[in-house]
Image (cartoon, rainbow, N blue to C red; front, side, top):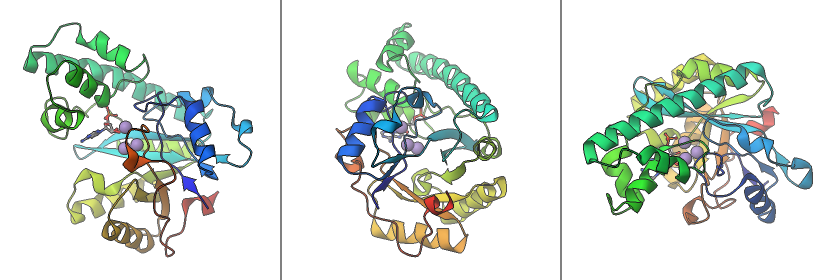
Length: 275
Ligand code: AMP
Ligand code: MN
Ligand code: MN
Ligand code: MN
């Protein structure tokens, strides 16, 4: 089965509209598909799932959270996008994202002596949707402050840098709980992207499971076979369902192309077996 349960549209930091992304997924013959924008469900107001009868669309979201000063991402799948506790949570995250954008702008302005109006320009780059660090990265590129998008993260936006602000996000327990209350499954996104030691990662997984987390992403975009093996073993050993997704943001990033990932190892129990 062709499955992709982690993708982004222009309602967060992706480049395609929700309709264009679904069309692309359908052209690629995906059978099970989710849009999981950062801290917003806006894409789901905009789509007509009935138009794609060969593809099941699973409602999803990717929530930003903080755990022990790390910025962790929790994907919620098979959620009820009308459930009040989830909607309250998402509204809080939206407000947190706005507050954070103001702080990032202030810090970058101070550090780099940028135009005091930069935030309004970043807002335009975000198409007046959710502002994320990628929009700040684009601003820095377009104003010649950095040589590349990657460089912007390396110098100013990535972990531990001046624009890395995470204290506004809700805690791990809360975000997992919003997903549970909406009848969905909480999935620990891209466990190897946090650069935690193996011991610390297993501590995170303990906390995630205690909070009610049900699955981990065994496949996220292109990754090395030994990484997939490790995550598959963790999912089996911890009795966690396994999820998989491209983390698609834009057709320009061919390594995150939709439908191009390896399939889940046979030992894993797919999260969709639970639906
Ligand atoms: P935010 O939601 O504002 O915390 O921004 C996080 C997003 O920035 C991620 O979902 C990625 O799309 C992007 N991102 C994070 N780190 C990097 C990096 N090193 N290079 C490029 N993009 C990144
Ligand atoms: Mn992103
Ligand atoms: Mn993520
Ligand atoms: Mn993502």
